Length: 135
Length: 135
DNA sequence: TTTATAGTTTATAATAATTCTAAAGTAAAA
DNA sequence: TTTTACTTTAGAATTATTATAAACTATAAA
Ligand SMILES: [Mn+2]
Ligand SMILES: [Mn+2]
Ligand SMILES: [Zn+2]
Ligand SMILES: [Zn+2]
Image (cartoon, rainbow over all chains, first blue to last red; front, top):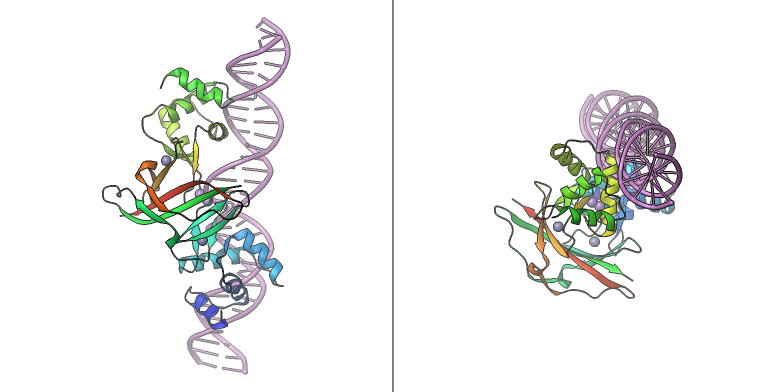
C-alpha cells in the first residue's frame, strides 16, 4: 500500500495526516491479511513496532474515525473489549475461544438455504454467521 | 412453573433459596416466552415488580450462578452491556438495532447448506446466526 | 514566509459496566 | 437453640471507554 493510499484513508475519514495517525493507518491498512484487534492490543503492537508514543485517546479517536468512515468494522465478541476488523466486506467469522482469536470466513463459503422472514414492519439488514471453535 | 421447580433451579446452581434469589428465579424462569435482558434492565423490572430491594451485586451474583449452571445463556450484542437469555436451547437471533431488542429464531428455521471446515486441530462447537434488522 | 486559525495530542479526569470487599444478616446443620 | 457457613449489602475497586482542557501542529491567509 502506497503512502498516497494511507493519506487517502485519512482524508476520507476527515483526519489530517499527523505522524501518529499516519503510523496507525500504516499499521492497520498496510497488510495483506485481515487484522482483527482490540484497542489495547493495537496499543501494545504500536508500542513494539514504532518508536514514539501514542496516547490511548489518540488511538481510540483514530480508530473510531476510521470506523465511522467505513474503513473498519466492529465485531461482536464475547467479553468486555470491543473488537475491530480491517475486513470491511460482508464476511463471517470463526471464533477460537481458547485463543480469543477471530478468523475470517469469506461470504462465499457460507450458503444459507432457509431463513425466517423478518418480523412485521422490519427488514433484514444483514446476516452474520459466527462459528465457535473448540479443540 | 411450580415453586419446587424454582427451588430446583436454585439448588442446581449451588444457591440457597433466599427471598432475593427466589424472586429473581421466579421472575426469570416463571414465564412462557424467552426473556432477553441486561442486568440493568432486570434490576429495573424487579424494582417495579416486587416490593423489596435488591443490591446490584446480588443480581450479578445470582445471574452468573444461573449462567454457570447452564440455566441462562449469554448473547453477544453490539454495545457495552452484557445480554442474557433464558432460552438455553440452540437457537438464533434477530436483533432490532432500533429497539436494541433480541428476538429468538428456532434452530429449525435456519438451514445452512454450506459451511467451511474448521481450521487444523480445531472443531466446530456451534454455529450462531445473527440477523440484523432495519425498518 | 510569517501569522492566524482550526484541528490535534496528551495527560488526566469522568463515566459506565462490572467485580470485589468486608461487615451485618440469615439459612441450615449440629 | 446455638453454631456455622453462606448471603446480602453498600460502597470501594477495577476495567474499558469517553470527555476535558491545556500545550502543540498542520494548514490557510496574509
Ligand atoms: Mn462484545
Ligand atoms: Mn457485547
Ligand atoms: Zn473479519
Ligand atoms: Zn434467545
